[in-house]
Image (cartoon, rainbow, N blue to C red; front, side, top):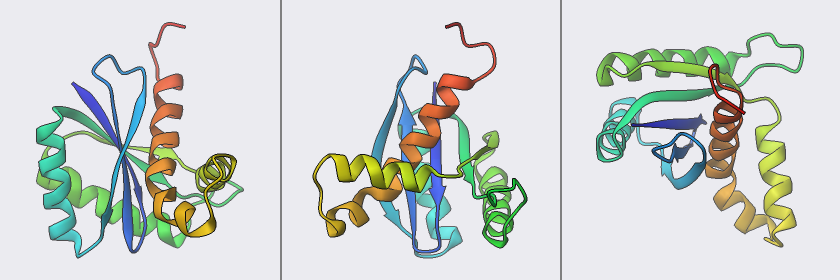
Length: 140
């Protein structure tokens, strides 16, 4: 059983999936959005192929913790995802994950075009790793 994390944007969806022991997050190829139904079908296949039992959706909040317009849109997408896949969907605060992903990719020496290509999946990986490191019941 694994957890899949999503960094949902207007044009792309960054994806990361945990290992079976729920210790580490691995980035997966970014999904180019084509429409909710098509996007959900791609995510359904990924969930089935990887035995995903929970989906974590990054929630883009304002720095003061309040919802943004984008978080409302993502909420609607997450509800549709939960309805179609019948897998529990949780939200996780994604504030500053894109910034952290940008820094990580910069430290790797990637130019801005290369960073742009990878930022969504790295953000999803950061969201998932943060969740795995802080989930309830995890022994440290």
